[in-house]
Structures are given as C-alpha cells and as structure tokens.
Length: 274
Image 1 (cartoon, helix red, strand yellow):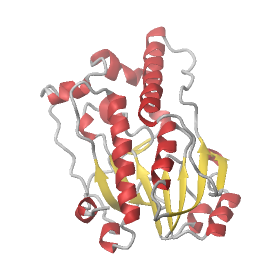
Image 2 (cartoon, rainbow, N blue to C red; image 1 turned 45 degrees about the vertical axis):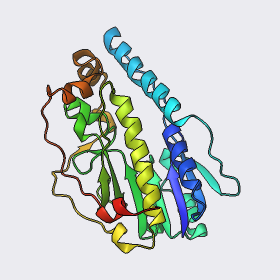
Image 3 (tube, rainbow, N blue to C red; image 1 turned 120 degrees about the vertical axis):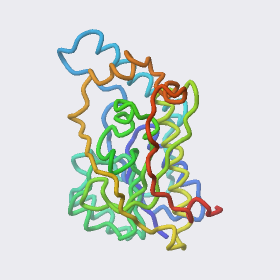
C-alpha cells in the first residue's frame, strides 16, 4: 500500500509522522505538511489581565506538555516527497496534483484543515482522518478542550473516520478515549489521546489486508460542531478558576458524575496483533 500523510507542523503532528514512518512494511509515498498557527497564540486584544494570565498559562502549559511528550524533532523523511502549504492552500489544485502524481492507495490526515474539492475528489476511497474529539458530539475545533468546559472530561477522546464532505462526519471506523489518572490536567489528557490515536492508526494501516478492520459505522449520538470562533478567553475560567486544572481529580473523586460515552469500537482492530 502507498500512503500519503497530511498533517500539521506542531510537535504532536511530527510525532505522528515519525511513528508512522517507523513501520517498514508501509510505503510512505508523500507527506503534506500544513503550516499551522503558533503554538503560543497571542491573546485577543482588550481582555482583562486575569483572562490574559489564564490564556498564557493554558497555551504555555500545552506547549511544554507536547514538547516533553513528543519532542520537537523534525521528521526523518529521507527520500519521501514533502509538500509544505499554508492552511488556506490545502484544497488547491497544486495539492490535488501532488496527490494524483503519487497515486496513493490510502491517505491519512491528522491536524489539517477542512478538505474540499479539488483535493477531496483526488483522494482514494481509503482516506481517513484521525480526529481529536469524539465525533459527532465533538466535531470541529478545540474538541479536546470543550469536554472539559462542559464538565465531562471522560468525553475527551478521539475518532478515526472516513473523510467526506461533511466535516468530521464521515463513517466511523474506531473511537477511543484514554484512561484518566489522578493528578492529570487537561494537557495530560490531550497528550494521551494523541498517543492512543497514533497507536490505532498504525494498527489500522498494518491491518490494511483485513476488510473487517476498515468497516465504517454511523453514530446515533446527536452531532454538534464547535468552531474556532466559539472559543473565548473567558471559557478558560472553568478549567483554571473553578478547578485549577484538577477537573480529572474531581471526576475521579465522584464530584462530577457524567455518563460515559457510547463508543463505536472496532473489536477486530483492537484484537489485531501487529
């Protein structure tokens, strides 16, 4: 199988690439790297000092957690064609032409923007996305943040689904969520979710010869799309002012009683031995 990876340029995305290219049996035909936003984004103008401090705490802690967990090393991609593009260029003709020139059997995306035509039409049928969020309830942007804001950290997880013209809405192959541990903050959960997701993507690619591992299913959970514009500095007050980033402990101690999500899990993939 020939695989194209479409991903970002943050530490988590570089970790994703490094882990995938370790698999000798996979033919990585090309990599498309999206130039993502700053790891330490500037706070919005005209916010009060308290919200500014929460903002800085949140994003500095996120950067430190990801660099510690994933390192900030570049990919080892010797001999693999790499195309660097801005997010707004992702679905343009040159990117579609790059994909067509490689003729991949499989495309895996992680951390890129919305894919539209002409790129969407250039993708093979076996094109999947690793989404950080339990879709369809947590579709869109910042979908590992919103479960914490909604006081349900046990809903922080990920979804592997087929790529379609419905953003994060393609048929679901497998969902997962990390086990929560005492002392974990929001970024610990994020790091663990990424690692779980990359683990299952690797298993899925290794099981390319098993159709039962690639079945897609539709969720009965009510959908909700979260947008970048929805996120405001004031939302951070829930995580840091109310819980001092100890919401996981509050959940584990029974202070937050939330039902667990009904996951779509691929039993064949979970049982597959690499």
